[in-house]
Image (cartoon, rainbow, N blue to C red; front, side, top):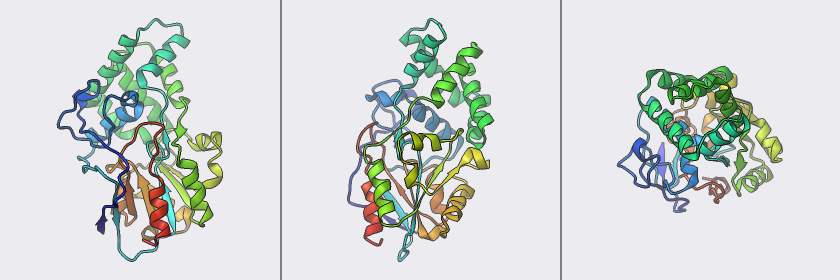
Length: 297
């Protein structure tokens, strides 16, 4: 595989450490795909889950610019997209989600208490063996996904089972939204005859999110971890997506935001583009894979 660094610069990132999750200072860190902690997105479920993945798997490489691993002289005929953090972003900070669920159930909780609950949960991701074990399996089935959230919320000190279930249900329906350039990117790919598959580690059927925003018509196939019992970076999900699109791995481009999970596609022989993180609602830089395909790279 040949490493190519496109000249386009899509985002800036700051080093990240688990201690800096709820502060305005960044340590030397082990994740470089997180936006600076001054953004509200810093408290999202995506951040919490990325902490868990980083602790469960080897350290990912640092990505400061769009990074492409591609075999030379290969014609790409299909695109595989990650979902959360690549095509869609979260709209509700995690403490706010906890507060909303508590209010709906008539529980009394202050914003500070919600933040402290989430902070304890993040620390549990680092140190509690039961939480770490549950997180490793969370995206392999719908039941494992629900159980992982239940385990880490209890480890955070929440003993209210009804509230735990309320938080989880609100998390599932929290309103993921596409980035501003998502629809155009998918539409342009269809316009040049390039089929698209979504390859996602998730615990529920995300097709409904595409339907909600009128994007399902641009997607040929979905390869979702909870439906097949395998997760990225394992190769099976990437291979399945290629089979669903009737292309060989060497004929596909994987586009994601996480070198740890999405980068597994490169080990499967799939050209892999890793996009640096951007704040929710910002331009995602999804024109880059289109330009790569149109240029014949």
